[in-house]
Image (cartoon, rainbow, N blue to C red; front, side, top):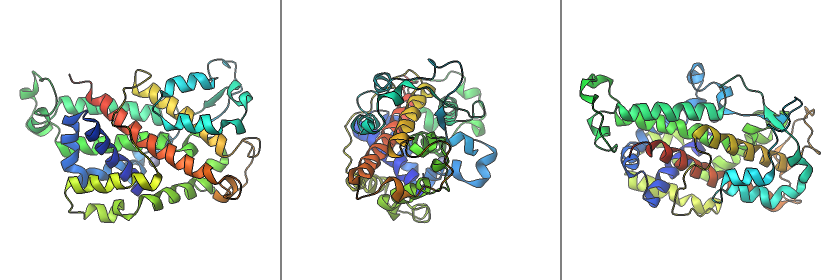
Length: 332
Ligand SMILES: [Zn+2]
């Protein structure tokens, strides 16, 4: 996803936590630092961060049919995926509404990604989740006043070594980047058509950026002097442009940890990629340039794109809030 969209998704997730009345200490850390630390939401896409967590393999989990011996392990039936997604995710609704184009046989086949070990979205989200828990444990007195519980050795840690709210907020925004990218179907599909420069991927992200609007553009946000209240209000105002309504609650993880939760979100995103560009019509072997209009022809399926926008944007915000809440829930 592009910078503007990443920024909106993460800021909107702060609003969702606030509206749900959960992880309020975290909201108090993030909210005053929104405009100064939102750069964290784009850092993984910036060239100089490619040596670290921003390596391109960390943004994707590109699945394709699996030909090995562990067929059962890499097959996931629709009902089982739906259980893992829970009732609150709109990706589940999208798949339920549209998967007749795939047919039941699609769900009987095994699929697997082949990333460099550990270098993929769930791995990156898990790593940042653990890093953030450590940062909160080692927080400076301002952070410590917001994190539940106490840290007996805190006074022994050099005051310059303790994390400040700006650092913590920047890393929470970085975590949001990976969670949001997991919801982009093209990040989870190994076909050439889902490559960034092969048409539909880039055009889809430009389409989302246009809807999000320029308020969240990098150049504007860094110079933004609006109060955090106003910034959150602007973020909430984007909901209607995607025709999204959020519940006033943020559910717990379904699968027990960030890694597994993101694995299942990626699997859902892969199913969505296979729905918008059915592998029967767009085979894995194809090297053809696939344009946006090839898969979202308004004359044929006018609602497909609207439904996709809604599901991806809703779930990206919700998943960020779920994973952030999970980090915060470590502290009781
Ligand atoms: Zn990215």
